[in-house]
Image (cartoon, rainbow, N blue to C red):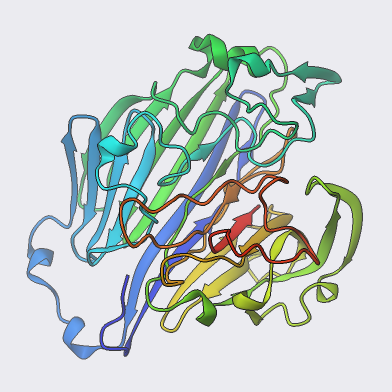
Length: 397
């Protein structure tokens, strides 16, 4: 998303709404909004496309393309993975790309696009979780929870069993809905033995991408919920050295050597003296913040700013924490980056949502940023920068 001649402001906004939780039906809603705000008079006139159908949903095999022709927002969804793997505004990639063709990542999406993090969104302190007074141990031999001591990001990022329910458009929006019968997949149920289904709808409306996630529990016992998304949004107007971060929080959680909270806190100014104006080039963070500062609607906004572009992460009233990850790194030309945002979460086994920002690749062969494990993270407070790590800035809520 590039501004026009420097006098048009282009912004990508990932808006998070709250989850509504009942005994057997869990619903979460996340808004990813890519808008173009401009003072250019030449752009104010209606386009020729406005006289035609504004919204379109086009299917080609396992891919559905959603369009808002008025704002020139295009979203491509790989239905078998339920992943919006590409999002563009005016032809500019909003989401980081590490691939030339979808065939390069089909069946192994990983952290490309907007991956769903489920059934846990962030780090667990062991290969197990606790629910309803019981310990549920993972089977590392299955290989979907990782072989390290700290599992993270859930195990659906490479899922291929999602089924297309519908792809439609009308005068108000274009959308695609997919469904995963989690309870039918033995390797999932072995690790997380709570029968349920997941239904996701990607909807393009008024220049925005809304991601609506519904969880229907069929379990006889209460099901723990920790859900998140992991997009890498790009800034394309400036280098990392020009970025600034605003963190609307008052309190910083202290972390242990595994980057897990200790339960102790301190004022945010102990780590970020000016939290509303943090020069990204000067910090190395993998830290969790709470006591969020909210507006009259109960919303808390975190921002990553370039020269003319800005990515805002807007958290709803029920969100209590946000994780910010920023690394010093190389990257081709130091260009690119993003601000992602997490999705709603509710209960153990992990915090509720995640998203990371990474470099804007200069070619299809660019390397994906590594997950922030204790072994490769840039480190928390006081850790020296890792010059070999790619530049990243991430949010977790």
